[in-house]
Image (cartoon, rainbow, N blue to C red; front, top):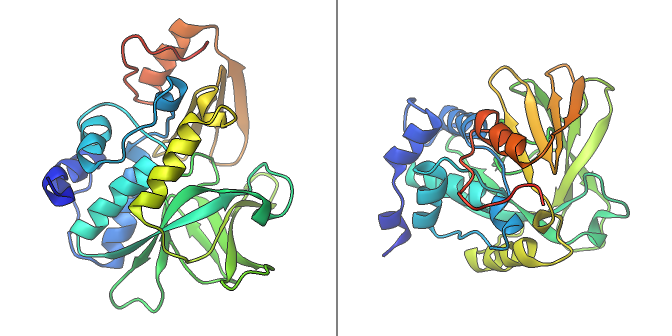
Length: 278
């Protein structure tokens, strides 16, 4: 069965609540990107349970569209890519090196993050789209692949900065501005080299199964709400960051509360028998 036969655009758009036009223009790209970002949570429950999530279109539909689950970058951006291609966009998958919270130069980090380069008719440049970066500095709206300009998107500020690199391709870093401190923080670095589904199968397997991968050790749940609040669960630590950048934090009391928070606050139906807090 082909990807198109496994994928249901109507069901996807209904899941994210998008009722706008289906023309491959900038308004559609922005609208679908934002709707996806607000509707589908980030979560790594499969790797925590010892399994690599499937990236097959039918499995993504069953889990994230028809089931009350989320996913991480490979799942989110594969699902978005399928939607954008069905809507008529030309999409190129990219891979990035996460620099948020990391030490050393970007080149010392592996390519473990997935994002998309999207060409838009009548626009002078392509756009960077990414609905799978599980952090408060992630994109809610796509940004033009142009350096030297700041972009406001649904209350978040981003810019693309060129980095010095010895490789043959230009290296860029996506940065997000902290509204509380005013400082810019790198999120991930990337080139515009295209990657394939086979590449992401390898990345996905490594991130989901390697014993030193943080995604195999404890749950990371993320969700952005329409009012601008961002919710994050890192193990038992639950953080709510408001639109102005201020945050509150508390520690969950145990498994029962963790499952309740996952369902009530993140909209995730935790499978029976799956343990969140070891």
